[in-house]
Length: 271
Ligand code: DGL
Image (cartoon, rainbow, N blue to C red; front, top):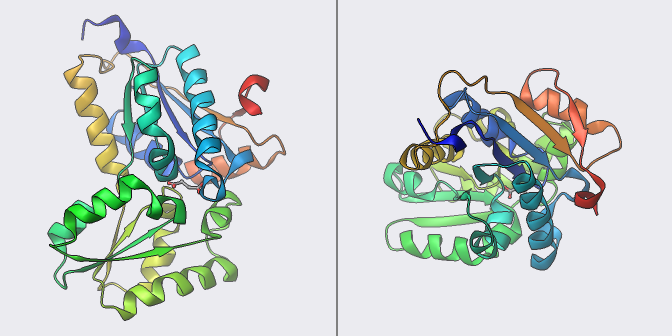
């Protein structure tokens, strides 16, 4: 790779810690890339904020990445994808990769012809999702379920308490009752709950997400642009959070699976 941009970092962000489920797939597939992660945990969940607010936060974070000379941005948040990506694309030259719930692979795999989608209510009501839904509507029956409270549980690093379990039981029950055989996790926080969800729904229902597909898409876009980092690059990962109350380091380390340093976002990006 001769392009001078190849050594530049990739910015990945989410309303909070959920995007780490996408970041780990990117790191696994592209271990030589220099990755910057921003968890906007002080403002999570985005799901109950206005579209304008999510766009404002996303713009501030993308500006922060641009000031770090990123070569690409991954919006590792379905809610921000629905609320902000269309507006963000024309504002920067860098490649932007956005989320899409794994409805297409689910539609291809389902045997019952019925799939379930768990997501935030903002994602489910977004234009992007409505378009995706319509694309597969005559092929499969899609049952959607909003999951208020689940993002907050993951933000606390609470992946297995009675409260988390009770919320999941409440949200998956209607899907199981309607004979889904695949559940799509349409929020990047939920893959951290996959073991518990799988245990609750049983092994006859597959639980899938789009983290690995997003990593593959990123790789292919970088390859096409000839800005994939070469094997000589070290591939460091840096973390920032807007949550200054001390929990960020602990939860990010827990979900990342290693003790990591987490910086607090600079003042101009915090507000
Ligand atoms: N991880 C975000 C998503 O994928 C959570 C949304 C939120 O903060 O409401 O949608």
